[in-house]
Length: 221
Ligand code: CA
Image (cartoon, rainbow, N blue to C red; front, side, top):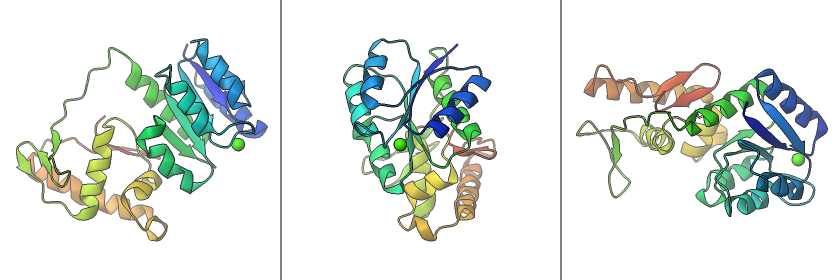
């Protein structure tokens, strides 16, 4: 049974997470302080960490940096503020995914399971047929340079970074649109639709860009 360390100082949120994880067949341990979490992770008993950014003693970012000095354990961040997202998705933190508060416990559990699936050593590596050129300005699919609009390009480039990760519409808006606040979630759907049509035009059987109902999109299953 995978063992999840939950690091969250708000009791109600922690309880919700513990309950949702246990319902999903996951073992949990809960800590309120970042320093306790760091000591706990050193025991090597855990398969994954759910880490709140705003903790009473040190920030979740500092906890993550400390963990990363000695461990590759997956980290799923919980964040209440959209400006924190930029730091989480920035590579220097070394997070695997994030969820913004308020969240649905079901979404958190789905993300935990997706991360745990990616960790399984037997999991076959997906066949990547997308290639970004050296300048990072064009994407090739089956030897064809794709003619993409700015947003189609941004979406595909983002999805390519972690091909099996599920990105919610809100996450894609944050990552691809510079003016996310004015962007509607259905705008993401519209650009995904045209992106898919362009991929299908090259290969009718192209199954790339997978819809996960109620959650979002991933490049590959
Ligand atoms: Ca907090």
